[in-house]
Image (cartoon, rainbow, N blue to C red):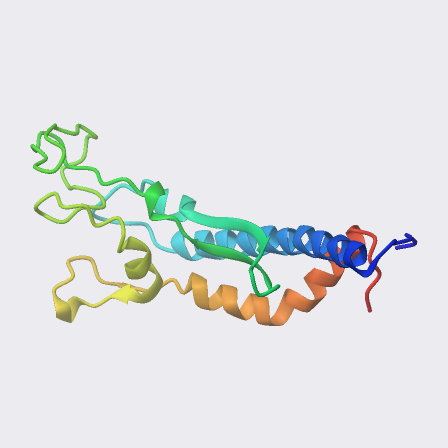
Length: 173
């Protein structure tokens, strides 16, 4: 990083910019790790009563790295439920949109039996699993993508940040 700075503020701005770029790189790696992990767990079983849309898997999303008011830098990986669409079974009138959805299914997807949107809780159900004792029709063990991501971050963050900082020309140990 052989660069001359005219002030401490200029140095601070430079380092902050490089840290945000580096954190963004780490965030991309973490996103890919979570996606790959969830996909592997997701595909370990083949559903018997429905056709997968893969919207749950493709809802894994990330907010780009940014600096908070307190000076910390973060990137957020989350399930973006806006990417999970509720589908009604073929020929069923939908009370909340007023039209029929013909997707070739005899079962609704991402809805309850009344056609109510359940897309906002799908990541929770998939993450933690569902319990047949509490009336869940399709019980399953949770996939644990968030827990696995937390472990990955704990084990890899420092190394991955150093790699990304070196890409930005900042040498680290």
